[in-house]
Image (cartoon, rainbow, N blue to C red; front, top):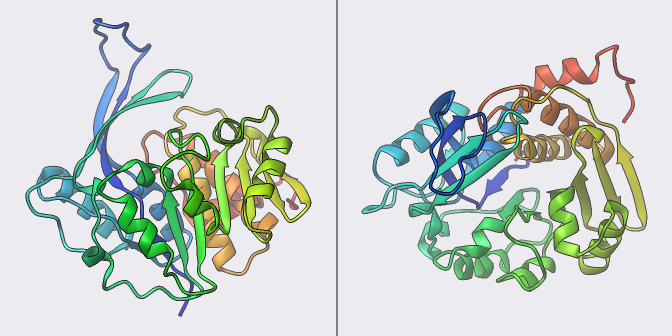
Length: 313
């Protein structure tokens, strides 16, 4: 069986609005555009699927207009859904505000995806070659974290545990973090998240600190925007070049990176080769509006093979 991405995070619906500047408290501004898009965990899963990796969503999804949108989006990407829709609650909503700099701000409301039960996971048969993706957001949901941690502790030997802290998990003291640390085989984050989590001032120092906390064979990948990413495994630190582009929307770029990175590793690429493709995917994603903007494998091939860039990582 090919390696699968088993995603335990949250799929939500984004209301994406482009505006010239954020309003002051009590103020009002007019958006230049607005659209409902399925986002959150869909971004990582869509990126992996578009690069050929089988993917299963293990989170909850609600009944209602947002739950319908979430299921339609996952079906369109070929993502399998492990659990039936939760009754009595809709999928959550996130308002994504995009400024001209391409920076984005979020206001989120948690729905059905904020809960999880052992029954939801009962039918999931994890294989040793699978990658189980854990989002830092999940550790903050009181109705989900205990069930998730119990389930993670029972994973079969060999299954990879991928952790993305996100913007809200900022230290070892976060709920469940001590349990998750001992399980992580792949850390993926942007530089700001890594620096905040470790309390370090440089990426190199952050990677060294993470190496002290994680298991000896863990792979750490820290994104550095247009500069590409930095990787560490064991005592070796390596930089993998990026693909500078003009960004119009950074929403979902890190998720595109994570999904394509996992698809590359699952297909047998070395970590630097997979990271190079992930850097290309993130570069393409920031040139497009919306959350799930990961490119196809063919688009990544084209950018990686472009004469404008050298062929090696």
